Length: 297
Image 1 (cartoon, one colour):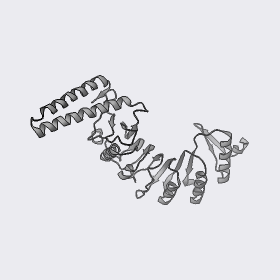
Image 2 (cartoon, one colour):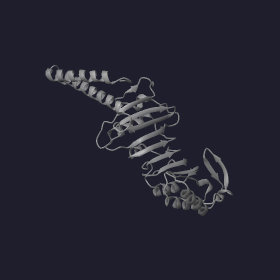
Image 3 (cartoon, helix red, strand yellow):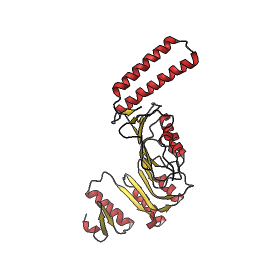
Image 4 (cartoon, helix red, strand yellow):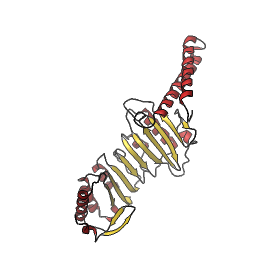
């Protein structure tokens, strides 16, 4: 390719991004074709500023982009119409990363909204809790503005814990405006372990349903006004220690519950069985004392 092709449309370069002046659809894809022949491009990301394009032009770009191999598509502008967003989502492949850097109407809905490999919504106030339940095998989901509160997150994490399948690698959620982050409410009715060096800003949990899934260690973190929840495979990623501690804590709590139940229901009977559970409890406590080096339980 003759690099002189870019000379007349070059504007500036910022942070390794090359900014060009407006070119026609044909000219843009001529540049794309020549660059991909010149350079190895393992990841291609497209950004369309729909405020600067007529609707038909936007659609034409989408059709051409869909004929190429790409990793991420970003639609950027002030506000995107429901019809255009639906058309975009329906056409995008599930393996793509979708970024909508735009306001979205509160009455919008789409069953595919959280079914892509990754998504990033600047405005996610239109999403409902049921939409979060639809997530399956996603890599990372970012929801910048939402109407979710702490009880919603508690429901979502319980759903994750009981789900038969892997749902996410990571989800970042900014809670509803003026919502105070309450870690206890979000993790209500979960057995948690917390790193005693990092204070109260994160915790680990274990999925209750171990079924047909790999990411069974959940990590909860607080970053200013954002909640981050990630799920990990303890046998392939660096979370085996946390998993083993959580497993022992669950076994210990289960044993304690069995002892309480026997004391309440049988009132002194079945002493041999109770003694058996008491010995098991002591063994779990001993193993925890040896294994656990870092966590408040």
